[in-house]
Amino acid sequence: MDTIFILLMVLVMIASVLLVIIVMAQNPKGGGLSSTFGGASSAQFGVQRTNDFMEKATWTLGATIIVLILLSVVITGKPSASAPAMQQPAKKEAPAKSSAPASQTTAPAKTPAAPAK
Image (cartoon, rainbow, N blue to C red; front, top):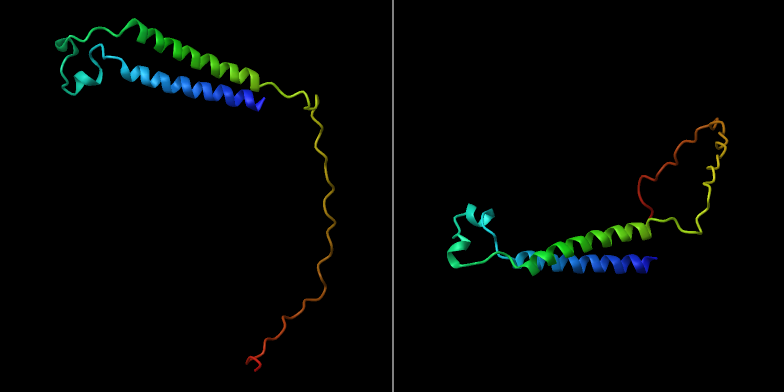
């Protein structure tokens, strides 16, 4: 099942890159950022409306990406057959036995004043 998921994700990435390329290749229809920053009007240079092919390709790739993502969720979202049907209750452990504190405290060992040579 991991192989199918990886294949679907690779297809989504390819479709996304193609969508970016097609959107960037389209001619602007006017307005947008180009007119905001003082760019020349598209109509002055005789640029026509975006091709029908480019527009159809944009919508097709967008729909393809959505379908591939939904398909990957449906395929990989199912629980595996090896999973238990019912969840087992968590086992409770008894608390650790507490021991009485030590009755005597030991003094730390004295360190020598000068290191031995």
